[in-house]
Length: 312
Image (tube, rainbow, N blue to C red; front, side, top):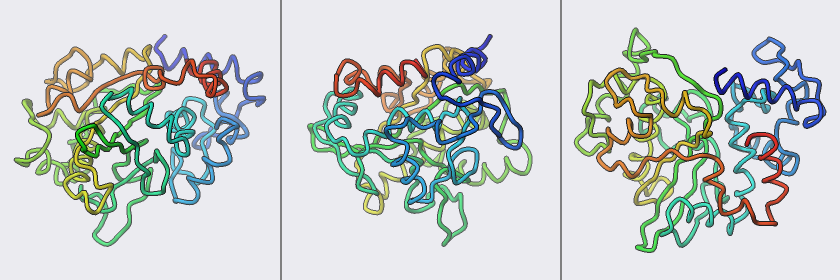
């Protein structure tokens, strides 16, 4: 069985006792045993009210296109919220997480909404040309959003925005998103940015390779990070950026199966690093490694217990 199948069996096995829910909830019009009837129970009880309020207040779309959380127990968006939402109002923990990613962080800053982490973050302006001029971007739908973002300061005084893309059971087929009329639209948006002289992407392979998932998403987030720091006065006023893909250790298909035909086949981390002018800006880590500073802290025992039983 692949990782998705293993996790599906696990959540069905613990569903009744852990979530107190019989399953058979609807996902895109079909009922499944791994979808909760009461979707709100998919969010950890201690953050449930605040997380739902946050998404509602800032018109953030819940996957796969709803104003309410998904009851799908394998939702990576829900997993991201369950792991990280507590950081919004916990400055000390937020700084410890940043320092775990780079020991030179000395301060964490509030985001657009005055929290220490934001979700489904988009830029203030559509630098990638994904929405019509004058129209607002929808967070979580139809434009490049970042699952979570934090901003901190290094010892050298530089302000850094940290992009966090959260994965759970995702796996991708060899589908070229540069093909057809939709592909032409995508290439019209991104090709010039990819090959701009100031682009962070150095590209050593045919440009179409960057239109295979997950590189299509990684590429767009890389361009977004670059443009947000380039136009920093309009954004988080960050000087530079770091980009992390959070992938479970056992999701081997996602971590090591490279879909793009001409990229390095040793895994997505090395494959994408090979296309960056500064490879150190992109890294793949596990959820446990991200939260390592808090795992044995009694202040976060209930959170770690929840995550361990449900995800780890």
